[in-house]
Image (tube, rainbow, N blue to C red; front, side, top):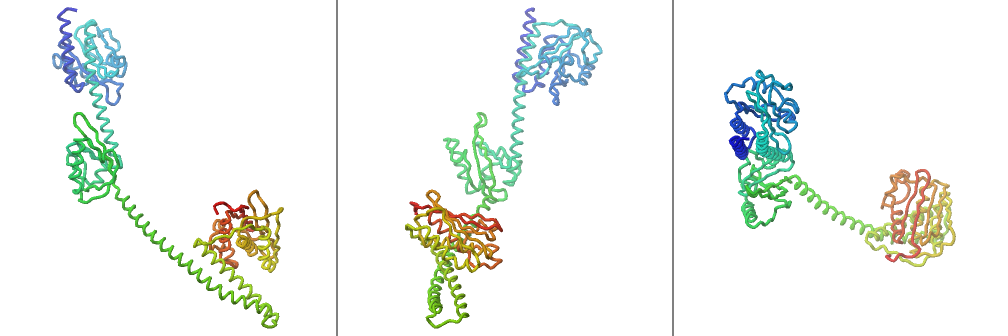
Length: 557
């Protein structure tokens, strides 16, 4: 290559490098580079092709053209405007696909042209501009006369393409940054929480759609205003300025990178509660930016206040109910004691009359005294139940444990209920599996619990039924069952069976005697022995109560 030719090409590369360093867009860099190439080579026309914005695999001509004589290649320009170059189609498409230069020395021998050229004499040369391994543009040139490929020129043009590729890289980076910025803005605008940002000078730089709703100020009104004067309540503004200044000078973070509850200022001139999360980001060029997500918690605070008031009201109601419950327990205990004394007196005189000590009785009088005696027994049992419940509620219901012959307790319970069972024609059966021995128990209260279950069987079994009382030793426990073939218990009512004063549907409908305390007291007695009670019942097929108590007194009792 002649020395002068070499200097021209080196100057061309230097000029292309300078242009690439100063330009930010391929269109801006393309024309001066094409002008420089045409000036260095003597080629009369050149232009720039770029990917179609809708399809990056198709290249199109741009309005960036160089012509030595304006209008000389008007037909070529018109033909180029009307043609698209998919990958591999035409000289531009081949360069775009392969990433390598194409040199058609004589257009008259070329059969793959996609543009109708009036004068096909001369050459066509195309060079790629590559960025990140992808062809970002194609530089295309034409000559009036055929020109043979020039290896030195092709090497220089490859370097020119590399220099213009740096412009494409910057364009891609800028576009990616702009896309990322737009994407971030769309994310922030769709966020349900308000987003606000300010620079280190205190000016608002970002304000999303949610912020407009929360603070009552549009984005256009907010951007560029002082944040402290816009959303910080007047009473906090001095502290805000001091906090920002302290961070910028010392780096001290009091509220940064944490979530706090504080008051904010609305555009309509009132404070409202918010939850605030703030963090800071430093940019080498622009300094610190303070970013914050803001959540309006007005509704939550109202709910919390309502719940707090409701809780306080509930506490007062519970305290009042406890007072009433204590008063009720005291009243029941007092009335029960007051009833028991005259009732005992009545029963004593009744026994004197029944024994005939006050004179002989007629059959009718004997029957009447029997009725009175049974009702006195009912009243006495009710009073004892009420007194027991009062003791349980007061926490003074204590069991007196001692070695107890279990069979004697079972027999005593059976004997206490047998008269009632006979009046209904029931068979009351006591059966024990093997010797039962002794247990650590309160015999009187255990008998009472078993009597309650037997009475329950008598009351809820049609006349002529069967009530069984069975017991057996099961390891270190005693298992006692009371089984009847009565009406059974509705499954929906079984969970409430041991609740005080609960009376089932059958008991209410058939007016069965009782206050609904027997089973509750029985459960208390069984659990007081460290045991448990269970019920197994099916409506219309009878009921079985099972008691399990330890043979030895538990250490915690």
